[in-house]
Length: 124
Image (cartoon, rainbow, N blue to C red; front, side, top):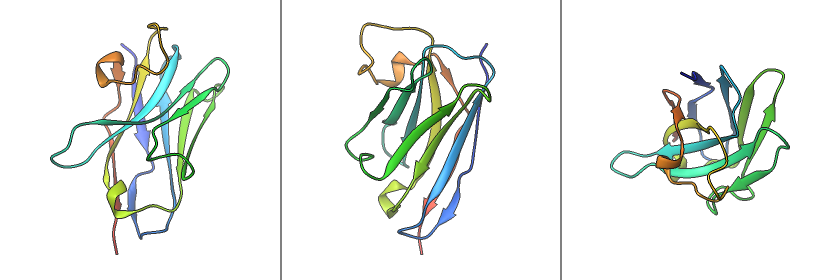
């Protein structure tokens, strides 16, 4: 069983920044960030391939969020800038264990391993 542990969440004012981290006990194919706000479905934010660092972003994240990885530390990061109240959610990291036909398959069901989540609150 792969363990994923997120950290870095917190309370930040609108326009502020946060950097989330996710440490994996083992590297597989691709790591993603999802988020879930109260009363809403879990949604894809971004992903990164361990092998070559190729990244993918949801439209809501483009231009404000950046995903990176450190393979030696088995860690993936989500740098979030210019945060907005609508970014408030629990943020989860998740890992695909292998290529499933498309790196654009970003439904939660495509991911086998999940972290426990970290709360991000954007508010004055």
